[in-house]
Image (tube, rainbow, N blue to C red; front, top):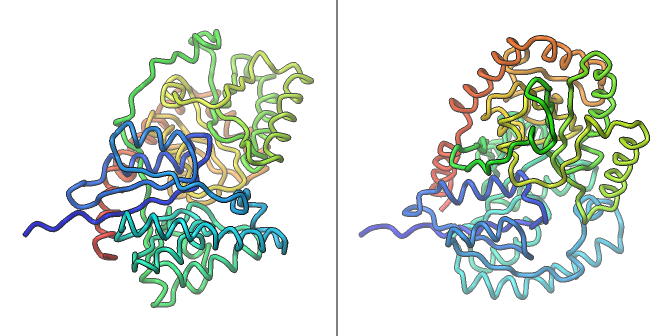
Length: 396
C-alpha cells in the first residue's frame, strides 16, 4: 500500500514585501516532492506569498491575528509588562480559532519560522499531536529573545538552521548537549534557476550607459541594513570613479516606525548632498533577478544577517560580492576568491574592497564566475528541498 504524503503546515508571519524568507518558502513549495510532502500555507493576512501560492494551486488559509498579536517583533521582545500581557491575552484568543482550523486541516507537522510563531502555535499543535519544526532565520537580540530561544529549544521537535555555525552562535554550549544536538539540523536554503526574468533593463530605465558601473543592494530599508553607510561610501568613491552608480532596491517596513524614519532620512541625505544623479532608490521590486543580471557588483552593508537570500541570488547571476562578516556570509564568501568580507560599519575597509573591484574589470569577472560556481555546487533549491523532505520523514 502506497504511503500518503505527509501534510505539513507552513505557518508564516506575512509581510507586505516579498522578502527573502517568503522567497525561501515559495521555492520550497515548488521543489518539494508532492508524493512525499503535501504543503499547506497558513498566514494572518494578504501577502505576495499567499498570492503566488494560490496561483500555483497549493492549499492555503488566512487565519487573522487578533489586535493583541499585531505587534512588531522587536517591540514585542522588549521587556514591557503591558505588551507581554496583551500578547498572551491575544495568544489565548487566537489559539481558540487556531485549534479549530488545525483540527480541520489535520497536519502531521507544523513548520514555523521565528520564536514568536513557535510560542503562538505550540498549544494548538499539542492538541492534535502534530510535530513542530522551528526554522531560525537569524540570531536573537537582547536578553528576552535569548531566554525565549532556550525555551524554543525545549518546545520544538526539530530546529532548522540556516548555516553550519548558527547553532553554536544561538545556543552556545547547549548546542553540544546530546538531547538538544539531535534536534538541530543545518539546512542550507537554496536559490533556484526556475525564476523567470521580467525583461527589465535597469540601465535603460535609469538612463545609464553600458560603461557605467552599477553597484547594487536589495533589502528592506531599515537602519540594521546599513544603507546609509553604503551611500556615504559611494559618495566618497565617486570622486575617483565618476561612472559609479548605486542602486538600492527595497523600501521601508510599514509596521516599523523607525524604518520609515530611516528611509526618510536617507532620502533627505541624498537630496541635501545632491546625490540624485548616481544614488538610485528604486523602491520595492519584483524584478531583482533582472537588476542583478545588469549590475557589476553586489554589496551588503548589513549589521545583522542570517544566510542572506539576496547575496545568494546575486551570486547566481555571476556577481562579485562585498558583504559584512555577519551570520552565515562567511560560508558563502571565499575572501578574495568570489568577494570580500568586512566588519559592519567599517567604511574604510568597504571602500578599499570596492576600490579593488572598481579598478580591475578582470578581477570583477573572475570573482563573478566563482560566485556562480559556488551557488551551483552547494546551494541549489533542489538540494534544499530533498534535505527538507528527509528531515520531515524522520520527524514523522
